[in-house]
Image 1: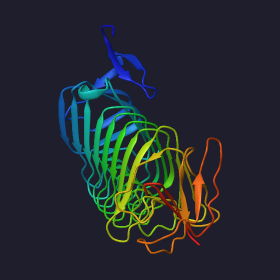
Image 2 (image 1 turned 180 degrees about the vertical axis):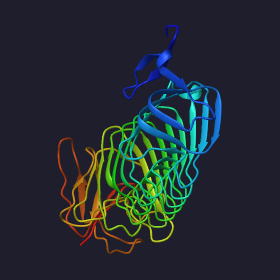
Image 3 (image 1 turned 90 degrees about the horizontal axis):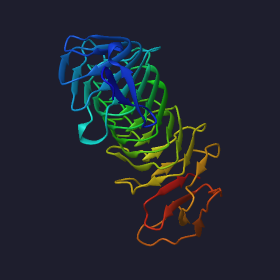
Length: 348
């Protein structure tokens, strides 16, 4: 790196450089990030919201730490409609800089505030930990937030929703969510009715595309691991593909499936590795004939009736899915792999 430059790793994993004279250092007094480039160096602690205005690029310097907590129903880092933040690290591994953001009541850790439009959040690296306030997502929407766009390409991301909020996605009553995960290590936990990744209480999961990464998604008290929140009448379009390695589960209360499309207009396409769910009768749920299901190439398992004695049931047919083939499952059947690691229920 030349003198007078800062390095950062972009969304493609390539190291880039930017002139130091165009980069502003974040301080404990920073309350607004206006469009442009910023860097965190050393340890910065701030009580009070940092508001993003315009299109902001934030570099987390090596071994740096930024901790921020929101106030007055605002997010820790507030990104409203029409604004965006892109977060970078300077390296991978133990030296990655870290960001810890906590939202006030009704506001996300990173994202929208109470009853407002959400903006765009891109994470290309760093250790990012975000916790939502009551009724808000860890990363994404606040209470009754409309329009959230999230893309995660790398880094280690831990997102926990406040009560009724998703880990990554929507707060309570939020809608119009778009989430894309291309890489990284993602730990997302919804809280009391919120999905791990997707919708909050009474919120649909929106469009969720997972192309890579290691994903651990937990929904609580009726929220899906990946998909919609509890009592949602809005569905999800879920596409899981590529090199993604996913463990998803819904825990507590009236469990939803781990991966849940919910409505008639929804669809689920899976072409990735699903780990064994922790506690689910079935892992993937499709509501009707208008839903879409694609099983991964190389899947081998059995189909059997959903009404059976679990201690004494009979397999009805054997299933194998080879490369470039599709698989149509009749309604009223449950599909499971040989070890029971994937359960897919097609309701009758």
